[in-house]
Image 1 (cartoon, helix red, strand yellow):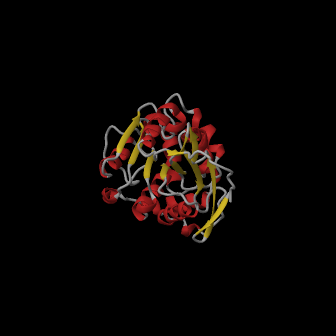
Image 2 (image 1 turned 90 degrees about the vertical axis):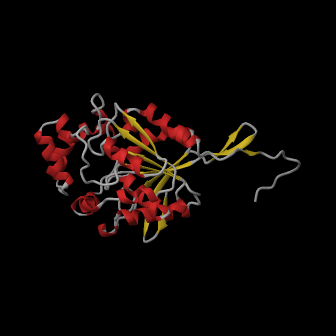
Image 3 (image 1 turned 135 degrees about the vertical axis):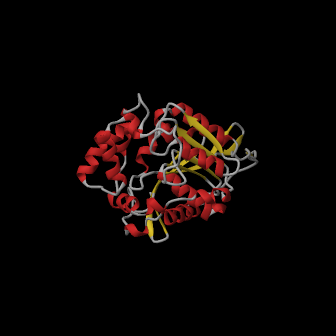
Length: 302
């Protein structure tokens, strides 16, 4: 499905009804808007891990501007701020009142900007494997790629994160680096998730060649008022647990959950633990049940 927001069309899809029969009443479950990472991926890789949340929430998947099935745009418009504005406009267009934004990796960057720029449109945040800055944070205990792989892999990662999206760099990254996005024992997970997403290499190159080095919202975290759950993987070297701790310390009353045996994709590496944490968080934001009035005569839907 598509809808027009700002100057482009965004692709979105929905799993689960928002209004559900609950005994003799109707219940409105929370709506979770899932924001993918990259930038330059799309929502496909999120579906295996987030799909089961449809049991307790309505899940709306979005391909951010210029990515996935959304319309191509000039990459200069693919700023985190503009993507956050798009998400706010999308939720308004769909009539979603203060949904929960679930941002994974760079999707968390977008979610943070949305909470800062459009607080009236954000009912909560689930920030998974993300960071408030890409500047290295001093933490001698943080996992690193070098802990898991050799110098060849470290160099392959450096090339991509410096903006090299050539086929050669991509091949080396996929072969040497991608398996280590997951924790030991789950190295097969990235190989199952990555093929589910289309890659917008122009958006990826644009971000890592410039905006990535300027991204830093640490000094604005205290301004976020939305209830927040922060989830980290203990083996995540991309967005280490230290980055999640910084977010949790900065946002008032934020909750932090570290899944020690997970890497960058906790929703697919440790799915039961991930779903439990999110379900408990959502339970505190579930609206009251609405009694169903007994019918006293013919009902004519209009």
